[in-house]
Amino acid sequence: AVLQHELGITLRKGYSCSSKAYHEFVHEAARQLQLQQQEEKQTQQQQQEQEPTALMVRPLMQVVVESEQACRRPSVLQGELRIGAHVVEYSRLESILSKHANDVLKHQEKRQEEWQQFQQLSQLVQYKFSLHRIGKPRNNMLLLKQGIEALRRLLIIEDAPLLFEQLAGHSLGIAPSGHACHLGDDG
Image (cartoon, helix red, strand yellow):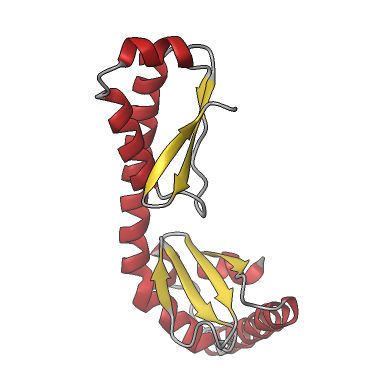
């Protein structure tokens, strides 16, 4: 928790990372953070006020720790920064976070815009077909772009009265399938 608060990130164990490697990563990075903070306190005892650092203005980032074999170099995928469990040196971790902060922010802004667009289209489709609800897409199962496209296709469908009769009062789910999404009314 200290590491996440200090760096302005949320940590998550990736699928390829073992629990042991993840625990060692968090423990070692937190230990190095404490060492660096102790050094900074010793060097800045004369100063009463500390100027804010670039890390304090960085947006909250989702950092996924993967195994060393699966993630040799840091990368940004779907708004998450993926790093290998071998990156435990605090200064190196700090450098990686600073270097990739803009890319993560751009992905997060794009995802937020897509999410708002999905919500608006959901409301339109829900109203048009008198649906009970529309299931929200999960991050790992359905890209928002696919969900948006499926909802757009529903809005321009030619047999809307027939579809209205079949869907009214039901819940609607959007799921990925092959090259396109499919709709299900099984709730």
